[in-house]
Each structure stands twice: as structure tokens, then as C-alpha cells.
Image (cartoon, rainbow, N blue to C red; front, side, top):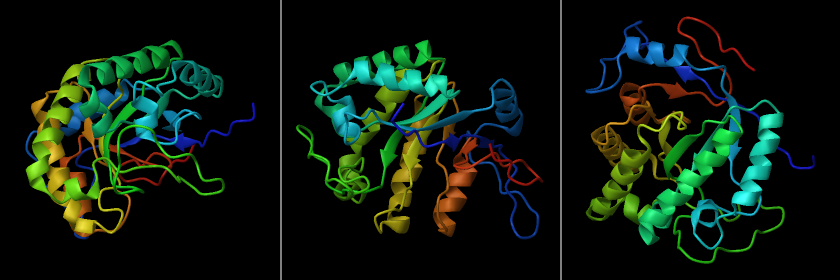
Length: 265
């Protein structure tokens, strides 16, 4: 096998395990899972090992999910490699513009992806928004990769302009409620990673209102799976809200347990 899959140990921080400098836990956000529910969910999971996944034939989320470039053959082959390595989950990015162009077709392709993943005993966590890399995503034909440039064609979801303009959020609300509502009780979905790296691309706390909104929309869809937005850098306001609002907390490198040290896989 000549393809390199980056190892990512996925785990959770359970609610109420976060403490401040005085040893006090923050209050539970409204409607967030209780510690008992999170513990019960986690007790049913295997040791979760996976990686961020996109097929080799896609430069970004749009190329992965648009009808003309969706590539189930490559997805099946590469998830087979992941299964052979012992991976049992994948972190998979969706895109609001792929949904907007063709909501029914988009959901059909997500369902097809879940069928393929299920055959390989892989339960993905699905990412709805992302503040990373190119700030002006456009549907249609995507740019060719630039050799030697990391993530040369990756795109935000939504665009920076949309993140900063609440007047555009009605479309994003429909996207979140439709996708989470459609797959919110699907046992093939591990959990929902609502927003990757909010505040990246120098947005900082300007992303917080949309992070708050996506939690409201996700809750309104009433999924059986937990909701989460992982912390990734030191911004007190963003981190506090993300920790207070998440049902479980995905860790990038290892398992963080209450009162203990990280356990790396």
C-alpha cells in the first residue's frame, strides 16, 4: 500500500470533567447531555481509532460530495485500507454548498458513503462547518492540486463572508437541520462534529455567534448521537462555549480522562 493514512486517535472528554483554576466545573449548557448519558454512550463504544478522511480523487469537500465528482469506487477501496489497518471511525467533512446545489442528491450520496463505511465496520463522525483554508468556496469544477502545497484546494464551509453575515444564516440553518434531521438517528453515524477549528483564518471570536447558532440548530434536529465542537487553540471565549455546549469532546491525539493523564494510542 502506497497511500499514507494519518493516524488519529479519537476519544471523548465527558461532560463535567472540565474544571477552572479553582477546581470548579462550569454549569451545564441548556439541553446538553448529562454526564450520565455521555458515560452511558461512551461505554458502548469500542476504542475509537481513525483519521480525517477524503478520497485521493477529491481536492476538497465539494469535489468529494458534488454529483459529478463523487467517487464511491475510490472511497470503497480506501476505506478497505483503513479497515485493514484496524480503523473503526473516520472524520468526514461535508459542505453547505454541495447540499444547497442538490439537497436530495447530496443526502443520497451521504447515505451511499455511510453504506460503504458500514461494510468496512467504520462509523464516521460528520463535520458540518469549517473555518480552514480558502475563504471563498465556489461550487462546480474545483481547482487542480498545487504540487507540494498542503491543502492547496481545501475550502471553508461556509465562506468567511457568510460567517460574518447573519442575514445569510437562514440557508445554513436549513442545511444543518436537514442533514442532522435526516441522519440524526442513523446508527452508522458516530457523532456530529458541528464546526472544525472555529476562529481560524483570523476570524477568532467573530465565529462564536455561528458556533452558538449551529448548536441551536443541531439540538433542534433532535439527533440521538452526541454533538461536539472540539477545542483547538487558546481563545477563552470560544473554548469556554465549546466545552460548555458539547455533549462529548473529541480529542485529536489520545484519550483525556477526568483526573488523569492523556492516554495515547
